[in-house]
Length: 411
Image 1 (cartoon, rainbow, N blue to C red):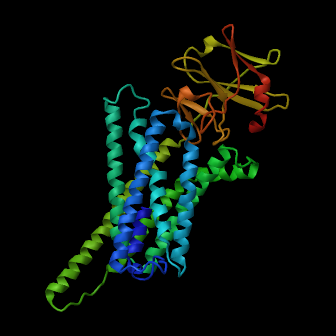
Image 2: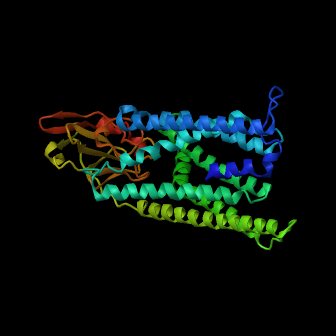
Image 3: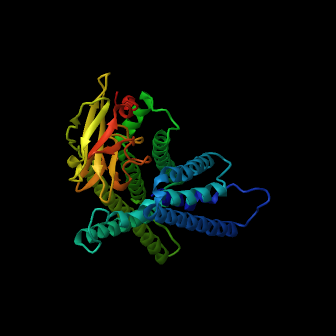
């Protein structure tokens, strides 16, 4: 949607002024300049798509998945800087630098497309086979979603080019600010998770607040698109067409009718997409009731859990109360092949939101991310914060000092 609005800005009458900054060493004709921009933008966008596809393959089939945060940092920072450069160029008389546009398209594709590529594989994560009706339904929904967003974006572009220069510029910059704010929040979450920002009360409180209203960013961008389409449609009413002959008048009337249809089509597809996203988000974000943890007491400075308790291979939640009266929650699960996954009922990214089990999967309550059970006990991402433990005489043994180290997280 953002790309559609940006293209509408470029192709509006505002594009006839010096929208792009050119150096004194480059004086292309208008046609050559436009051709150069089109070819260069296609090339960098294609490179961004290839980069996203490469990362998706590495993330899905290798241990590279443990450094997703570093990849996001590497592509998000130049993306935000390019967006700032574009916004500044549009608001000033200097124009937009070609490099800013190329960086924008490159890293926009590199940042947002990996998840799109990985969805078909993730759809099968909790299924026995891809040759099942459940998987086919998920793929069908995936294809419908791609079709809806493709037509929503294209029809929004066709509708937005009928806006005035000022209106299309305001709509694009508003959408850009909304998206940048959401990207900055994601950046803060990553910096918190990697320890680059201290988890003081204010930062965590603000992060939790904005996380709770994250869905509003999408609603705001969809609403902007609908409003832009309605404004363009309203501007076409009551138009009087003049021409040298009746054929020319009929041609203008037909063009106006086609533009009006694109405005209505944009509203329809945007509302369909918004309805499904909001509806699915509501279902996914319904409050999950987590069972209370089992309280265990220390024996000679150790917490002891019999291994037979874990043989069911389900998630087990425990708590230990420290001398300061703080309940430290932790989880234990037996892994499918061998070993045990042990960690705090908290992660570096989402704090002490906790985990729960759903259809054999371990889910983060805050962000709804599905944990790879084999990686529970390893640090990184939304994985539970790990700590040391030992196995001896059919028991899982934890030194209370390991939990006291993390007492501050639950205080």
